[in-house]
Image (tube, rainbow, N blue to C red; front, top):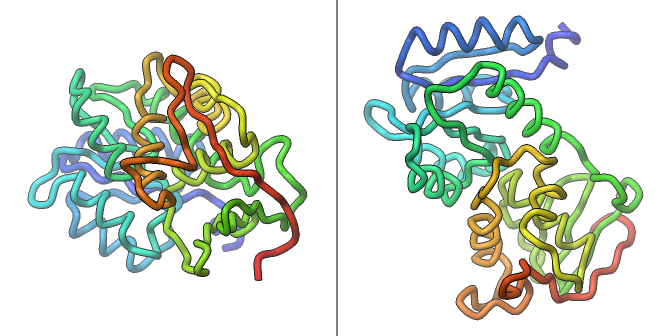
Length: 249
């Protein structure tokens, strides 16, 4: 039982039974435990009854679509940090961007190679499960800026008022990248490398989307950002001074 508990549990949500079956067989052969769901209702029942480490979520579903379901996942404390890989139609960039806006951590266009999906799953799980990135402070450290506290062990962000702010795995990784490299310009490529472990594709717009989401959560006025500034032609600049210390109170 202990060995099974350590096996990552994936939830594949797709209304195409053949796709669910083929993906489940492939991922099971590569060491994962896989549960399938044909729609949002089955997805929610699975999440209510079992621990899930990552969700592969199709955009086009009967009833509630993948975008709406992803929004619900991010608004629910129990699933706010559960990684989500969104499956979108080939060439639909708008869908991919909107999916990232809703909180998806990555996306893959249909039809896709099972090996590409496997690579994306492994990359997202590495980011989500690693408590610290290379070069981060020692375990138990908390990064503090402008009254905010970013607990690297618990993967939690607390506001200056002590309120827990829900972050997706992608938002958390991006904020860590900023907080570990304050007061210096980081290009989009550098941020993709730091926050996503080189799993992005060329011309990936996910950093811009994640920055927008972060601003809405930490900026006093997201329309006039003071903490994460855009550097024209350069990238982004995290302006606060950052200190590290022991565990958050």
